[in-house]
Image (cartoon, rainbow, N blue to C red; front, side, top):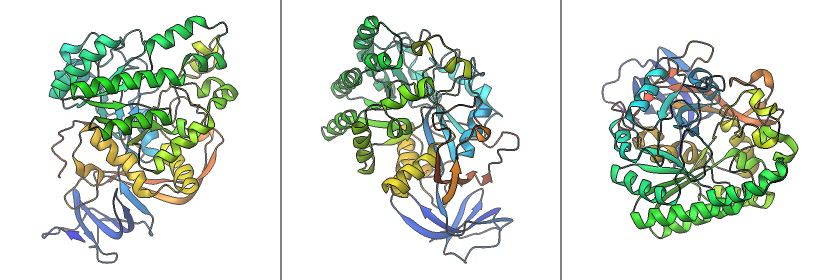
Length: 456
């Protein structure tokens, strides 16, 4: 057990915690005085100004969702800093990594990143990490992201956004090289633009079935292969976003064996939904890349359980009810799934309880993996004396049902409406403060990769 030599009366003591990190678990009391002041045998803690008895429940490093779209500024009717981080905190998330798109202006240089960070101040229930954007038109600006403390830039290989030009082959090659030179990891939405465009032009009916025929598995595989090839030749760091295919995971793992610095994430909707849900549920389950068939879903779970996937993100992509459900056809309905509030509880029920995922693996997927991707200090995904006192406390036996009334996201829709399960976060603690989702925002702040308050 660890402790500081000089111990003041702690501000907060967590009693009878079953601590889980990526590689360990043990029982402990934890004293918090600003940072983690002491980790001691249960029953040996000093009396704190405030005490929480966890009664043997799991305590993990503060969980992170490394893939969200909060839509502010510009589209706050979809979601915003306050509503998005409040929903995340209620679900046990302590930090969100916000994508550079789905806001105006998109984050394509240091100034737009700084402007977005200033706008978020005072509006956060969780911490926030802002990704930069990489397009065919901003390659000269990439070093500005590093100067602002951001180590990841997101790009697209498919033309889906009018204000965020995608990276076709030439721009992708130059973009990966420029990003690598600047010290950035390139995070890519991988779908082959030529294939998507060609098949889209062949569509006769704009329904769910034809949507699946446009955004095919082959489109994802071709784009991933191309990106890995370029990263390998250039010696760059690459991250594959929201992989829908087990074959994508295979490609990444084989590339890693060759020494390529590439990581991969998947999402809960690719693990829980199939293409049949898109047809049956309609636009509420629409996203790209879409969920695939049941056989692929089972292979994804197998790879997750065998530690072949680096992290799990929600890809929370919110929209108004009108944009989702009042479009004149399926193709024009908003594409994206709202789920930032439910990632932890869905993974606890369907991963831990139903599939045997360990809590150590959960920490790797929702803490250690995101920390490594974002370039945050390793202590952020661990629990040790001197580290920041940021935690998620879990109750594996807590039953839940997802209802419209309890949705805290700005727009009350999700494909998981009516789902029931067991296991959820019960305390979200950021820097020793229990997040009060009924109170005013202010628990969180905008993070930089080199944040000085972290201690290794």
